[in-house]
Image 1 (cartoon, rainbow, N blue to C red):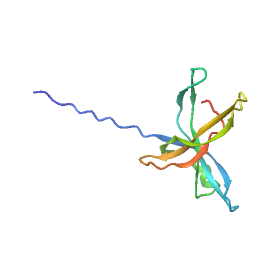
Image 2 (cartoon, rainbow, N blue to C red):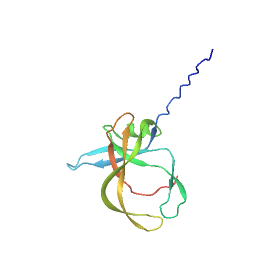
Image 3 (tube, helix red, strand yellow):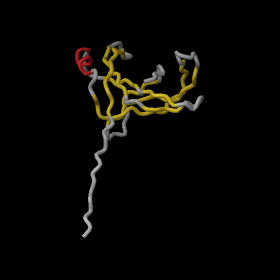
Image 4 (cartoon, rainbow, N blue to C red):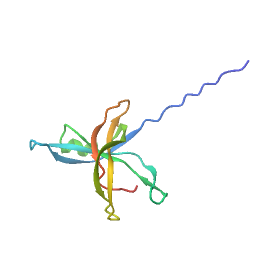
Length: 129
């Protein structure tokens, strides 16, 4: 008699890391704390050279707490991922090369199991991991 062997593969959760925070100002002049979150490292192929480089995705999400709590959260992991979002075109200057690029994407946090995104953040710098 043949026995059926079942193997359960546990799906690894996507996680992002709280890497910093910024104090931001609303249109009405009041301030709030935005958490900076960073994805894990990923390999991207350059459209220009065809070579691969390591990078991370970053974005900011609004919060309801103060600086002390934000500082204590640095290094914490949050289930979810940072996804690319199509936005209106904007100019971006690569600080390393001085090249002016026309981009039409941004990054936003997407909680695990959700289709909603939070904190659409334009690309501000190219950061190699």
